[in-house]
Image 1: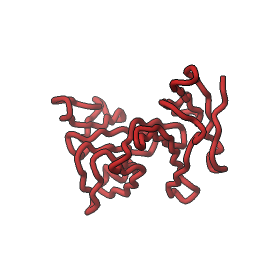
Image 2: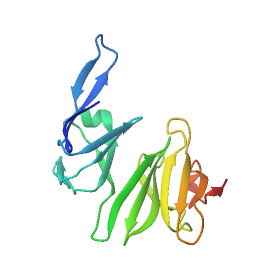
Image 3: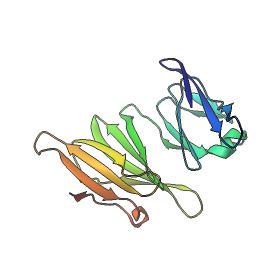
Image 4: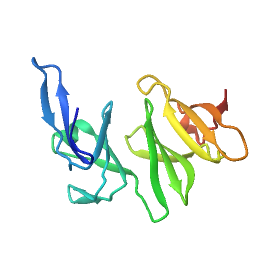
Length: 179
């Protein structure tokens, strides 16, 4: 639950529904940080530099980690995206087992998919490198599948809606299928 005090000033709470009445526990993060959770993951996007366990994550990055461990004060975080002078994170979507990033690099969209291997280490791959133009990605059903809707808009071709399946992403780059 997000308690908004001002535009970039929030307090984030976890709701424990196992208690009656449900209990709220504050998540200890900066007030300007965007946070989300999916399954066991905590997903954090700081708007200003964020220091955790003597590691500084820059503003505009995307950081993930085991949410329960984070709440217990034992964060094991991994930076999936770090902005540069020429790159920024445009959007992010989560599927059942993957995190898909839409990145602007020199004002050109490109997609990355991040998955965990059998040891829990994060792996990055380019996703649909053949696509050009403004690219939007959203999960079909983030809880049940690794399918994504991909919309592509450019100046030469009409807008296209594609359906992609990331369930076999460990096999290398994936191609989107036209519907």
